[in-house]
Length: 146
Image 1 (cartoon, one colour):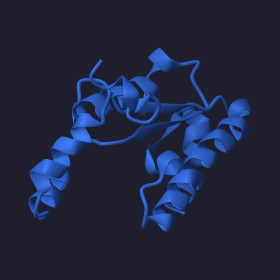
Image 2: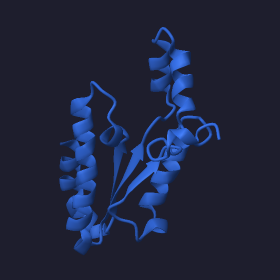
Image 3: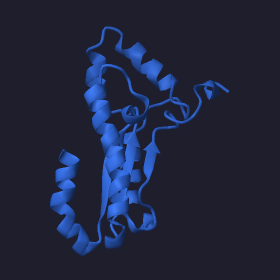
């Protein structure tokens, strides 16, 4: 609901400024992870809203995109790992599954992608789901180690 309400409330200003909307999505909308049905459904809705709004707002020249994040290294992730009995092993295992450089995405990499998508440098980009994940979602895990 928060995405919908925020967009609805911002729409008059967006129409006036011909600004754009950047939604933040999650790998869980596409991959699932178990025991997160409500979260997965909500994030799937974000992807659908992104494409629907991109169509609805074409005539207003408002671009709408979604940045999709997978495993991103944050203080919250570190806190979670610290509470696990084998946290370092879990983190190592996750990193090993990220095809590009076997590491989690840094927050500055996410910020840079967001800045690009909201800037005029992506002035003809709308309705897109953009992944900043080191290939985590789309690349075949069999590529790891080659």
